[in-house]
Length: 534
Image (cartoon, rainbow, N blue to C red; front, side, top):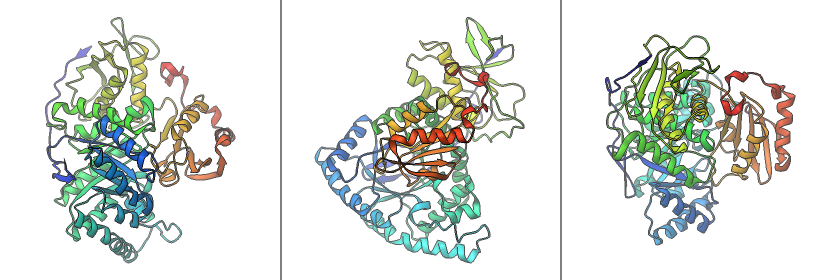
């Protein structure tokens, strides 16, 4: 029944990023994967922001990001930085900019790195005027306008040695890009390449690139396409990785580890952030564990896996979950499983190419007593097989303390995170930041509790309207902070209720779900659920 495997054949390593300096920190090349997080304090509050920066740094972060939604916040970065340096911390700071070029230009003179989102920063939202047949001349004029708007920031960053991260998110592409390329991995990467060409024309190469999504499949496809496009043009830049709106708790950790782990294993990525709807310092141990598990003491993959294509499966992709109990492999209905089982040590995973025939049931063997470490490690290891649809099932075994239904539930969670098999609701929630309009952690908890009786829905809980509506693309419902004490309720990406008092918002969300007939959603059958949900 069981067969051993040799995993270290046919590996390739073709993408190498250059080394750039972010302040005193060397990023890229053969340097360790750098870890970062983002504050959720009001950036105008110097003491609170500096204190949270210190907690993040002491947890192990190499960089810290702060939102600067306006010039006032950008100017106060100087005071925060001064306080940190006085306390003995020289960790590079990143200013997160969305809509305000003046804030970026101010911050670029203060911090070591600026993150701009092309879809928000210089591109414009003009759905009323842009069409699918946008003429080339008009398209090119838009690019010229964007170039002109970027030029002051480029010059300031050049003068101050400030790094720029182009942070393209799946949920915030400009209308110009969407109308020509769709809300697709191609659109994501084209947006990045267009901006890169502008920087190249100005002889500015102090760049980091990120293309992110809350969907692990789109994340992997977009980053692969980015690397291929860069290589096509003979370019190379450090790459930042992260799963946006990963959520909280075990689900957020598993989704992040699956997406980030797949790309790190392929040699893609120089810096990462695990985006959890929790206190930001909680993100750092998760990121460190992903890097430790995959990269070892060097902090970087030395023998990357080759890029195996996504498998195009016909019909429903529904990987099996097999359990091992008292010397027997059991199917989900508790009858004996008699098929082949691909058994392997977690340190030597198999290299599947997608060409294998037959029912491929993966059986990794771990030796772990800590539930969180097991969840992170198993997702980082196994995520790629189900994101790429390479395997037909999963049986996690463990020689440590974690046994039985806990392993079964973990297998279901990995399949859920990779969207290989949906057995419960999917919750998309952003990490908190200085723009958050309510207590996001509390809101996530309340929404999950109120909708726990439903199955198969995608529900987004977003802290503000800056990226919320875009980043929750594909969700059935949205619960979005609009102002202090106010919530917008969305059906899909369309707001159906605005400025609902927060104390009423949960009930209003449930009312809309009920009106849509989703309260009796039977899209996920009872036998398709992990043990904890039955």
